[in-house]
Image (cartoon, rainbow, N blue to C red; front, side):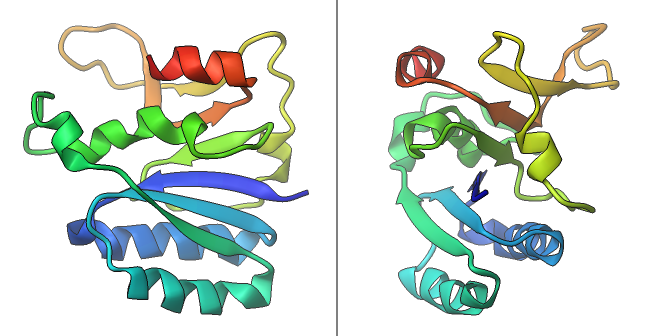
Length: 158
Protein backbone atom coordinates (compact mmCIF):
# COMPACT_ATOMS: atom_id res chain seq x y z
CA UNK A 1 0.00 0.00 0.00
CA UNK A 2 1.37 3.43 -0.96
CA UNK A 3 1.42 6.05 1.75
CA UNK A 4 0.57 9.70 1.02
CA UNK A 5 2.27 12.14 3.37
CA UNK A 6 1.95 15.92 3.24
CA UNK A 7 4.46 18.23 4.91
CA UNK A 8 4.69 22.02 4.85
CA UNK A 9 7.84 24.12 5.07
CA UNK A 10 9.71 27.03 3.66
CA UNK A 11 13.34 27.28 2.57
CA UNK A 12 14.43 28.29 6.08
CA UNK A 13 13.15 24.97 7.46
CA UNK A 14 14.90 22.54 5.08
CA UNK A 15 17.04 20.76 7.70
CA UNK A 16 14.10 19.79 9.96
CA UNK A 17 12.08 18.88 6.84
CA UNK A 18 14.84 16.57 5.57
CA UNK A 19 15.14 15.01 9.02
CA UNK A 20 11.41 14.22 9.09
CA UNK A 21 11.55 12.72 5.59
CA UNK A 22 14.59 10.59 6.48
CA UNK A 23 12.89 9.32 9.64
CA UNK A 24 9.80 8.32 7.64
CA UNK A 25 11.87 6.51 5.00
CA UNK A 26 14.02 4.73 7.59
CA UNK A 27 10.91 2.78 8.63
CA UNK A 28 8.70 2.91 5.51
CA UNK A 29 8.79 2.27 1.77
CA UNK A 30 6.33 3.22 -0.97
CA UNK A 31 5.78 6.78 0.26
CA UNK A 32 4.54 9.68 -1.84
CA UNK A 33 5.59 12.96 -0.22
CA UNK A 34 3.84 16.22 -1.06
CA UNK A 35 5.73 19.26 0.20
CA UNK A 36 3.60 22.39 0.51
CA UNK A 37 5.97 25.33 0.10
CA UNK A 38 6.40 28.80 -1.31
CA UNK A 39 10.14 29.03 -1.91
CA UNK A 40 11.99 25.70 -1.98
CA UNK A 41 14.22 25.36 -5.06
CA UNK A 42 13.24 22.76 -7.70
CA UNK A 43 16.80 21.39 -7.58
CA UNK A 44 16.28 20.31 -3.96
CA UNK A 45 13.27 18.23 -5.01
CA UNK A 46 15.16 16.65 -7.92
CA UNK A 47 18.09 15.66 -5.69
CA UNK A 48 15.89 14.18 -2.97
CA UNK A 49 13.67 12.48 -5.54
CA UNK A 50 16.62 10.58 -6.99
CA UNK A 51 17.66 9.40 -3.53
CA UNK A 52 14.12 8.20 -2.74
CA UNK A 53 13.89 5.95 -5.78
CA UNK A 54 15.73 3.15 -3.93
CA UNK A 55 12.84 2.87 -1.46
CA UNK A 56 10.18 3.21 -4.17
CA UNK A 57 9.18 6.65 -2.92
CA UNK A 58 8.53 10.03 -4.53
CA UNK A 59 8.54 13.69 -3.59
CA UNK A 60 6.52 16.48 -5.18
CA UNK A 61 6.63 20.22 -4.73
CA UNK A 62 3.24 21.85 -4.25
CA UNK A 63 3.70 25.59 -4.57
CA UNK A 64 1.47 27.75 -2.39
CA UNK A 65 1.56 31.53 -2.66
CA UNK A 66 2.52 32.89 0.76
CA UNK A 67 0.73 36.15 -0.01
CA UNK A 68 -2.55 34.29 0.56
CA UNK A 69 -1.62 34.27 4.26
CA UNK A 70 -0.40 37.85 4.76
CA UNK A 71 -3.36 38.70 7.00
CA UNK A 72 -3.05 35.54 9.13
CA UNK A 73 -1.71 35.70 12.67
CA UNK A 74 1.96 34.74 12.99
CA UNK A 75 4.44 34.77 15.84
CA UNK A 76 7.76 33.41 17.08
CA UNK A 77 6.69 29.77 16.62
CA UNK A 78 4.10 30.17 13.85
CA UNK A 79 4.90 31.52 10.41
CA UNK A 80 2.80 31.63 7.26
CA UNK A 81 3.80 28.05 6.28
CA UNK A 82 1.98 26.78 9.39
CA UNK A 83 -1.28 27.50 7.59
CA UNK A 84 -0.39 25.38 4.54
CA UNK A 85 -1.71 22.28 6.35
CA UNK A 86 -5.24 23.39 5.52
CA UNK A 87 -4.52 22.49 1.89
CA UNK A 88 -3.32 18.95 2.67
CA UNK A 89 -6.42 17.22 1.36
CA UNK A 90 -6.69 19.48 -1.68
CA UNK A 91 -3.38 18.41 -3.22
CA UNK A 92 -3.55 14.64 -2.84
CA UNK A 93 -5.98 12.28 -4.51
CA UNK A 94 -5.78 9.44 -2.01
CA UNK A 95 -8.15 7.72 0.40
CA UNK A 96 -5.80 8.49 3.27
CA UNK A 97 -3.56 11.51 3.66
CA UNK A 98 -1.22 11.90 6.62
CA UNK A 99 -0.17 15.45 7.43
CA UNK A 100 2.98 15.76 9.54
CA UNK A 101 4.67 18.88 10.83
CA UNK A 102 8.12 19.14 9.31
CA UNK A 103 9.89 18.80 12.65
CA UNK A 104 8.57 15.37 13.64
CA UNK A 105 10.66 12.22 14.02
CA UNK A 106 8.86 9.06 12.90
CA UNK A 107 9.99 6.02 14.89
CA UNK A 108 8.09 3.20 13.21
CA UNK A 109 6.07 1.96 10.29
CA UNK A 110 2.99 3.94 9.30
CA UNK A 111 0.83 1.28 7.59
CA UNK A 112 -1.09 0.46 10.79
CA UNK A 113 -1.83 4.13 11.41
CA UNK A 114 -3.05 4.64 7.85
CA UNK A 115 -5.44 1.69 8.17
CA UNK A 116 -7.27 2.98 11.28
CA UNK A 117 -11.07 2.77 11.07
CA UNK A 118 -12.40 6.33 11.20
CA UNK A 119 -15.80 5.10 12.40
CA UNK A 120 -17.59 7.66 10.24
CA UNK A 121 -15.29 10.59 11.01
CA UNK A 122 -13.32 12.40 8.30
CA UNK A 123 -10.22 13.27 10.26
CA UNK A 124 -8.11 11.66 12.94
CA UNK A 125 -5.93 13.48 15.45
CA UNK A 126 -4.21 12.80 18.75
CA UNK A 127 -4.88 14.55 22.04
CA UNK A 128 -2.64 17.47 22.86
CA UNK A 129 -1.73 17.25 26.51
CA UNK A 130 -0.38 20.78 26.76
CA UNK A 131 -2.89 23.45 27.72
CA UNK A 132 -2.32 26.55 25.62
CA UNK A 133 -4.00 29.89 26.20
CA UNK A 134 -6.19 28.54 28.98
CA UNK A 135 -7.64 25.66 26.96
CA UNK A 136 -8.02 22.45 28.90
CA UNK A 137 -7.96 20.11 25.93
CA UNK A 138 -7.37 20.03 22.23
CA UNK A 139 -5.63 18.05 19.54
CA UNK A 140 -2.13 18.06 18.15
CA UNK A 141 -2.38 19.74 14.74
CA UNK A 142 1.12 18.50 13.89
CA UNK A 143 -0.18 15.06 12.95
CA UNK A 144 -3.52 14.81 11.19
CA UNK A 145 -4.87 11.78 9.37
CA UNK A 146 -7.42 12.67 6.72
CA UNK A 147 -9.69 10.03 5.27
CA UNK A 148 -11.90 12.28 3.24
CA UNK A 149 -14.03 12.09 0.16
CA UNK A 150 -13.79 15.06 -2.23
CA UNK A 151 -16.89 16.79 -0.82
CA UNK A 152 -15.45 16.62 2.70
CA UNK A 153 -12.07 17.84 1.41
CA UNK A 154 -13.68 20.95 -0.02
CA UNK A 155 -15.54 21.61 3.24
CA UNK A 156 -12.38 21.05 5.29
CA UNK A 157 -10.45 23.74 3.42
CA UNK A 158 -13.21 26.32 3.54
